[in-house]
Image (cartoon, rainbow, N blue to C red; front, side, top):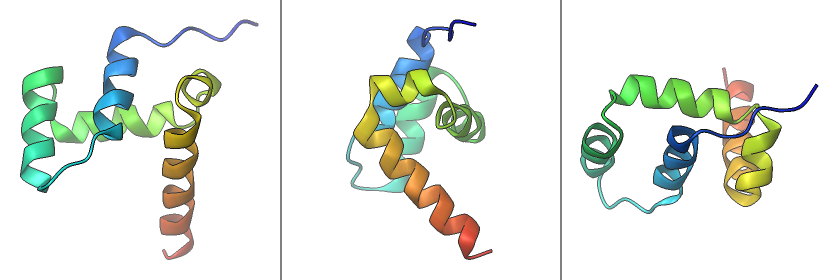
Length: 77
């Protein structure tokens, strides 16, 4: 079974996550303005992307870093 390619929105979510933010509010504003979705939906999409091999192939450094952060947070719960 072939993996489905990343959509434009998927790539935009990864690109936005890769950017550096001076304040959390700036990131939330960019999520709303650039993607047209709520921050909660953004993080749902991002979480799903972290489990997709296509996302890992597209942005391996970012996805591996975010996976490590997620696993670290799960370990502290």
